[in-house]
Image (tube, rainbow, N blue to C red):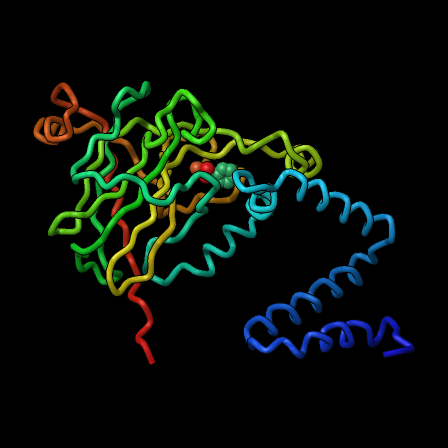
Length: 290
Ligand code: BEZ
Ligand code: FE
């Protein structure tokens, strides 16, 4: 390859990856090379700008390790994580939303209905719902993997005062596909503001650091595509400018007072009334095997 020019360098760089044997990987890499070249041409990228961008990526790498990924945060604040979630959402199914950095594999199995409140401060609430297929058939084999932050805004991983299994659990739905969970109302919290993603990119853009209050859930059922999603509180002030673009209309539920005293009692909440959000979750079937 010599005599490379603006006219042929993109084709040369892209076809240099033709030897990648996995066809999907080859497609991903070659298409990325073309997209990056087109971007540089579109914006007429200068040498200084290219070096600045690399320096930013170096700073991002320096803040990335086993328990913290500044690269994930970069993907989140650029809306890329949410775009991938939306691309993976099946028609008719509950849309996916960001996994975020605070999922812990192997949460304790708890009996359904469950009360996760323990010694947590905050406002007691009930989350309940039914897991169904896209055509409304209950999925009694479904499981939930649930986690949320505490009343101080923090997840257990970054708050030594919380026990390590605080406000998280796995749960089997009942024979009707239903679940009930007493917990504390999730509160809004800020994305990390001590790294280059915030200081060099998000803050200079005048954007908010706040995530709308949410709970996370991974829903799985035999024969269905697993769903990684979030549940949002309709009264939250940050629904319209969530820092990581996680909010979808179908994921917003309202906490409403109930007078169903038996529900409050079943979940071990004192009194005859409590705030309840009903949010049903729909899973798409797995594609049929060839
Ligand atoms: C979260 O949902 O916990 C989260 C998502 C993206 C960045 C930071 C936190
Ligand atoms: Fe979160």
